Image 1: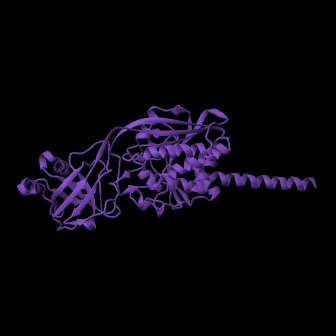
Image 2 (image 1 turned 180 degrees about the vertical axis):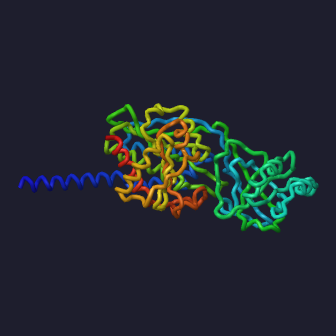
Image 3 (image 1 turned 45 degrees about the vertical axis):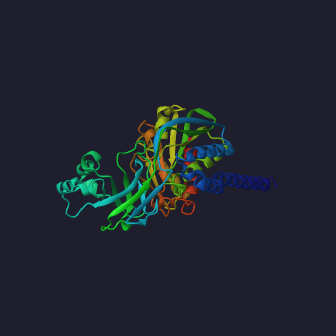
Length: 426
């Protein structure tokens, strides 16, 4: 009788632990946070309409609900160009749709008027002939048109052509295949002449004129913040850190916003649910969860943090940067720092044991997300991203939304990182 009762108690304890683990992963909460952050309320978590500030307040509330021990706010400022106003373009009278048929570079100035088009002959390219053509009175102020990749083969020529004082052009249009992307990385300035991208399919070779009305608004010293939540561990000599950026691209005119469900509401939701997991199961070491602003604006938030760390960088045992995991590729992109590369083999062992991903792909360190500023400071870290799944083509487009995000990566990634921390915390 004693042995039977002991056995039943053991089974009950195992089931309870399994229930706690599944509860901590909390897929419904993860989905709810992504849906909220990618909604119209936050207008792409950009700067012009304060979407990033609204998102910050929401994330702080979610961290509190998760049960973290403390939340610290780290403000910083950035210069940023935005497009909250008119965003109109017509080619020979045919109006195009912003975000789908055309977009602008992040440093684009405001521009209004009607302009002649000058198509660069890329098959019989003659730079001296083009310069003479552009000097003609009838071509002054025209918009140059060419394929996006062509200038990479003629960088010096196009540096000249994009200088309004030398070539007297009004702007430049690059043609691109679908889907068009929008960026913020170099939005800390406003260029002298406008640069637009259009789909190749909407810019025929015989097109003659464009009508454009684009409004920009440049913010100097825009105040935003990093959000740092903490779970107290049993030990305080070292710490683990989870990071994800919560900012995104904001607006492209009044009617179009970039929801960023995959990029990076997915990573933000993941670190919030990880915070809840460790609030329920006290970790061995202090554990921090940092939601960065300014990532899509050239990693401004993480660069600021490593220059002004709230916890000494030398105390970080390992850092996990989670970005764009709202997808369904069974292969996980893993990008460790030099000092963090030792962890990859252990992560592979854990993944094989768990049967989570088909495989982990080891990739070279690149300057493309918030792990990079830590990596160059010698912090052991790794970047997780789920590339080339069904949601991947939509990143940096208005279609990166609730309808296109996928949830396959969350649970196996959650178990991978929590098991890894468990292994090296012993």
